[in-house]
Length: 94
Image (cartoon, rainbow, N blue to C red):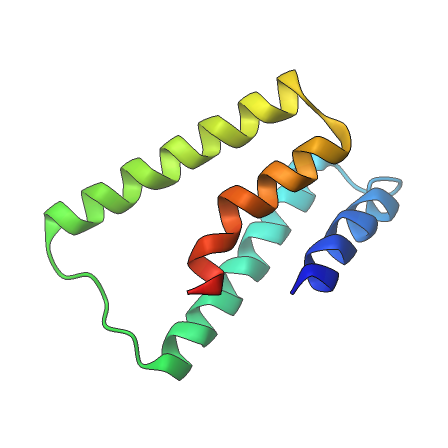
């Protein structure tokens, strides 16, 4: 998992020479979402059913995006990679 995560940053560095940041961010999110759907399907995880649950998920995603964006603006570099692993890792590890 750590190798795959680290490879993503290397691939983005190389891809930035030929593409835009927004396109790469969208592609990365699409791939990550597809992988999560595959894992959820494999584990036969139940989907959230209530509006309250979906609202909670949306709030968590929004807070996560704000934290990562703030980290990119304030910290940057290798520290940001560590923060991303800490923030994003627990749902995958479960």
